[in-house]
Amino acid sequence: MRKNQFIALLYGWIVVLGFILIASVILAFFLSFTTFNEPTLTWVTLAIGLLALFLGGIVAGVKGKVRGWIIGGVIGLGFTLFIFLVQYLGYQQMFSLEQLLHHIGYIIAALFGGVIGVNTAGPASE
Image (spheres, helix red, strand yellow):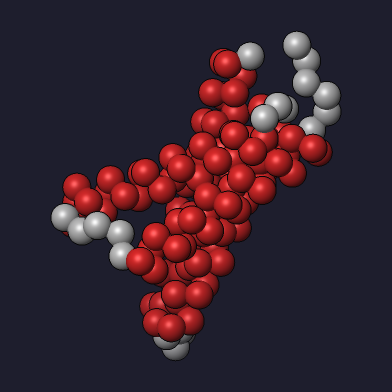
């Protein structure tokens, strides 16, 4: 059972990081070749992050089949921890209040994704 949940977490994190990587490349092209401005970029990146964590939570919930809110929460917390470590160790900066609010939203989105994923998956096999 625990191995199945760990594999579900790995799938969820892979989906989150893959989605964000692809979206980052697309946004880079938009910034290079269009008149995409910074205020718009802030809202677009927030929406992409929420969608990525929601989808990662769904994938983890479908794979885990039980305790979707825990699996989704761990997906969100793991992502937040990863971003915090990169920012703190790489740039020596703590989260700002705005970033903290964004990451709370990311955790909630992943949590809801996990709940929806578990409820769309078939029954858990014990």
